[in-house]
Image (tube, rainbow, N blue to C red; front, side, top):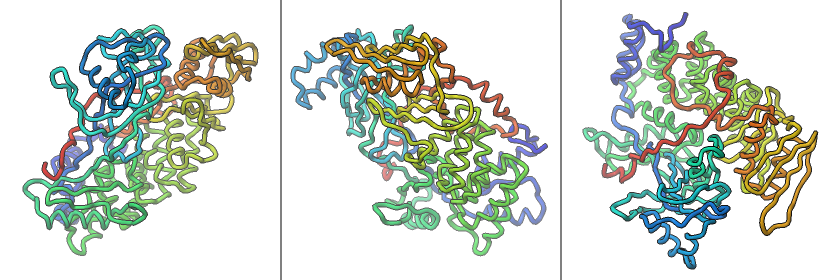
Length: 574
């Protein structure tokens, strides 16, 4: 049996230890004279990573006090605090009349809003924002509320005052009380909410490389930039140019090529593997050594990155490896080929996404680069998979490639959420998000609702199912009663709720109640995002797709970690 990362013998682990210790190249097991000669070539090759480290890869926390309006008497007048002072100052700056009176209304509540801008974010990119009612407030629920426009910046509370920096983002939109928690029984959960994809980046985030202190010089900075630009380019304002711009003797700014827009960590790894002084005339020797290393699952990950850094010259070597009998070797070779634009990798990446959970996210990210027929066909073939992660991951990847594609395009409804009905096979699945982008995806076109259902959709809308019909009614104070009768199917009821001014949160509540009352027989899943965190275990150890699908019958999103970015400051003076 081919050894894996987890089952490798002590002797097999020695090369990996050498790699982690910082050798010039990934080692291999044989130490024949021929291999020793090839190793000398790789060890004499200096890479970008030997001189520079990445900068700007941390998430940047932004926050501010905000005001939620439209509450059904569940708000409160906030007590004196630093948060109230910050909100008052913002309201006065915007010219709000009688701000104290507005804050005192039970239809409003002060909230502390925060989110994390991802590294490399561009102006206009969106991110999730979380809302929390401070503990000393008397607000009882944020359900049904709307967050007024709030400007977000890096902040610190000093004494009893909130000190903020430059405005980096803004957020506004309907509030979604956590749809995964039992909100009706957990009062605390009603005081936490989010706006999926509600944050808008106003200031782009820079990434780059910091040259180590003992190597800093203007000539080296320029040389590193030139080497990177021979390998990578991007299009800026319609012009093709290299991605690296040496700013000083210690900092090189990096643009992000389109192929790596959703794989920033990999991009930086490949950039750091670009050779600066490859021995003259020894490219074939390097390729031979890396080919041997790629054939071993222990050293394959590092070898694939270095081959990807070489570029098109490495394609023949990688093509040979995708025919390996070892699934790890096949995956790492196919992943590198995808980022080099080789669509022959599509089938192998789809196989990995379907069979191995540990690399599913990485495989789908690589498939998103292949926007030709091979890539599209491979992704569409995953839409009827048994795993919710695989199906929704494939949908998101196809939507990322072409939002208007005939299979995945949807309709914009209500307060800005999307509904997608996919005509695909596989077990019926209703998927909803509370992160990234508010959307509901129906896998399959037939999702009936059982007779006898009586469910609420927010505070004003009621859904009643009798036989094969559903009556959706809205009852709100000061408004004329309205109702619509539609076939008792999930998609038709969702559209009716939106037409009666229901929100995304209302639709989520309806779906949860329908499932709890067993009127919805289709599987209901939330946030089935494939994990993109690297997994060190070998692919051989993974369970079958069927076992994985059974184990992960209910997918719940993990909360954002409250971590501050370590990348703030001026890199040129670091």
